[in-house]
Length: 135
View 1 (cartoon, rainbow, N blue to C red):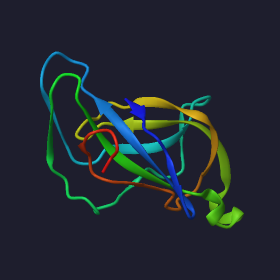
View 2 (view 1 turned 90 degrees about the vertical axis):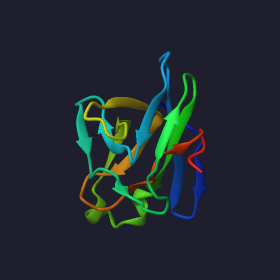
View 3 (view 1 turned 45 degrees about the vertical axis):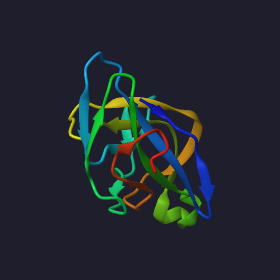
């Protein structure tokens, strides 16, 4: 599990979350990963988890050993919201659940960032697709 190359747009950053099959066997994935910001010092989730963006329909992805799949995460700039609505807080990681799994991996962010600690929609995730770009 790793983060792909981030790209910015007005008010948001788009970053692929990349899953790679490190086993010696073919596996499949279907659907959306679960993603939330995390304060790795406390282990607590910060804000609400990612909402699903139905822009791409879910489909079964077959991954040979060494192959990758990805899903694009849209991260809305927390400063798009009034401070009182967002209640910004520093975050250092993301908690990621692969599609169809109930066990998560905590993925450190390349640098500390700020996230809304309230229920505003700051994260949107697309369905998993083959490859590393999320496209």
